[in-house]
Length: 550
Image 1: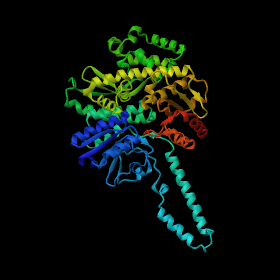
Image 2 (image 1 turned 180 degrees about the vertical axis):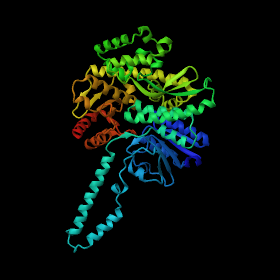
Image 3 (image 1 turned 90 degrees about the vertical axis):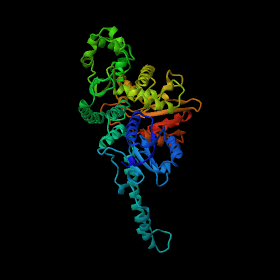
Image 4 (image 1 turned 120 degrees about the vertical axis):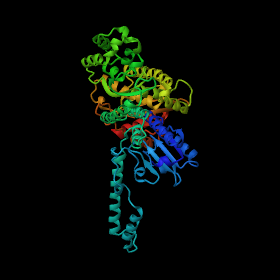
């Protein structure tokens, strides 16, 4: 509510889809209350520092979306005392100083998100008290250089307490993970203020779906958030039955769906979608001749004519489309694909346009990280933001075409990595390095594309390896970033498992390995598990990681 009274706000937004959606919700709220704001995309800590320096003179209030929570922000930005930061960030753990400073830092977090923050007394000691105690215990010394027994006991106690504090802090900060979607938090804020609209609700659906697509939250968290959204969707649909003619061409309907885990299938052919979806491709092992044979058997089992399967979904016979989901599910069960359907939402714009939430995530991500044209990251950011508006379906369709090319590139890269044994077991982790000159390698210099590739590759490797120990290892992936500077982008993801809590320990490990070997790294991403590294330092950096994690 404080925000309603401000006239000038600087809005710093990280380049991920959930952040874009949260930004759309907030922009709509600002529009309602006629709050003036300036929107600045910030790709990393350096960007954030620069953006703050440029805006700190004329702005007192700053809103940070999906950035800023996991470092001591006041220490990082060194703001004046009257600057106030509203942080809506899914990155966990939240830095303890941000949690306990409530004058300048306002955290926007869902009530039931347990941050697990250590208590204030366990991590902060009052140095002045310590010094006074220390002086008292030292005064009784008789002038000799040896500290008195009391002083020695005090020093020992202080040492134990400090070690205990460090240990508590280490446990708290050890793993990186993600909290509730920023878009969902913003939507619930709008709901509490009775200003929520159907567009805002759809953006929050896309935000939660983004966390699922890019593997940021455990499956149970996704299911819980979908249930929350389902209640909001029912409420809106009920409310709107009276309000708008549900058949009008401009109308927007959101429906809960138990839909197929086949990527972009309504905007592609069924065949292409099955070949380029991580779930089906890994289940069939499509990179092998055997896998291709299995796919043909699966198509035969469904009893669909090949001509229908290979043409655009829109052109398929209506009779086939009507119970397609059930037909596919029945055959999938026979081929051990028990969960080919997933809880999600679809949006209907007028009569013709139906999109699943995951379609929009893939389209927006492809626009955001588009490498096909030489456009600035800021241009791409605005295009991705635009494709989320229902008035911009043309842009969304462009995004879907880009996403298809990206998914094909991922599928081909996974196949070539598996077939040429590029995934090496390094002891405590698996490692894969994409070489300069690999097809589409430029695409994977971007974090979201690399994340998707990494997740897909690990799943494929786990499906294809016979080595039981390798099945439970995390994966580190490196791809060329800037050939002239000789840098690579490095990303680490946790082991593949359906029940994984998605907690990632690579952030801390990367920092320690770089420190101990003086490797030239840049830890600029808001996700600590993504870093830049000088190619020449790769060997010693990896050796240090192996030692550290063994």
